[in-house]
Amino acid sequence: MRASPCVRASAHPHARASSRTVRASSTPTSSTRTGPPPPSVVILPGLGNASDDYIHLVDALARRGHATSVASVKRIDWLRNAAGAATPAYWRGCLRPRPTVDWYLAACEEATRDAKRTNPTADVVLVAHSAGGWLARVFIDEYASEESVKAIGGLVTLGSPMKPTPRDAPGVVDQTRGILTHVHERCRSAEALRDEANIEVTCVAGTYARGTSAVTTVGDVGGFVAGFGYKQVCGRADVDGDGITPVETALMDGATHIVLDGVYHTPLGADDANGRSWYGSESVLAAWADVALGPARANI
Image (cartoon, rainbow, N blue to C red; front, top):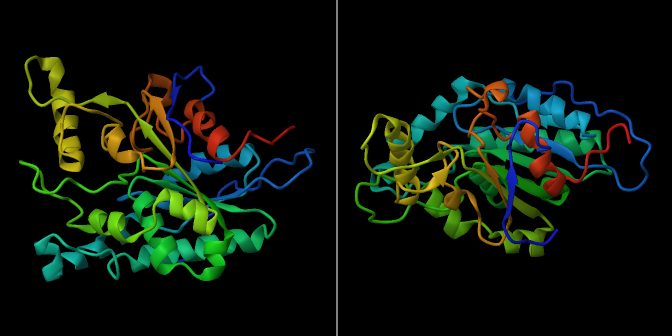
């Protein structure tokens, strides 16, 4: 799959839209279709998320024919990142991801190896949520074994910040303390991952909330809150995003881009029945999975 122009899709509910690997209902429904096996999926949790947050996504992907697992992450594990604040690099704003996030990268390695061992003829696709997107790039280029890199056929990012915070933007504090700049400068581009490692990159963004830089009516409060967060990521408040990550930051240059209208950032607080669908909701899944993983193969 070569990088393509940005695809926009509706996410309306009625549209098709330890170091152990955690598995939940991950056995795909059998299919009679011949040809190469559907890729195995390894979900990489976002910042503050735990593996259990993705159980429904695991089930949905299994129904589409994908053996699916989640890198083992507990919510409390993220407190390990506080070690980075004890380094001079943190306060200078030039923090590097390693060794602070090595605990996370080890979980990625274990999950990738297990997925390939379980389905040796299938490619592994990393489906990375939020910060899992840039963590996946660090994993591929700075930590993963040669065996794991060869096993990976794709990287799908869901609402992931893939571009660094603009330097010297007024009123902006780089919340990654330089890590995204390091990833942008040191990790391979989408084109290089495709050409050098045969890893196709697909970036998925959502437009749940439009940010605003000022409050003029009561109805502007939500947009102002979202806009303040967007500004810390991309340097501007008046942009579209999923409530956390601006669209423009979530789209890695050279990757396949998919922008989903009305899609929320996280499974925490998502409510499909009341119009607050996230990237992994049943009503949204097909809109990006058909492109990045191929059509559903279950019951075919």
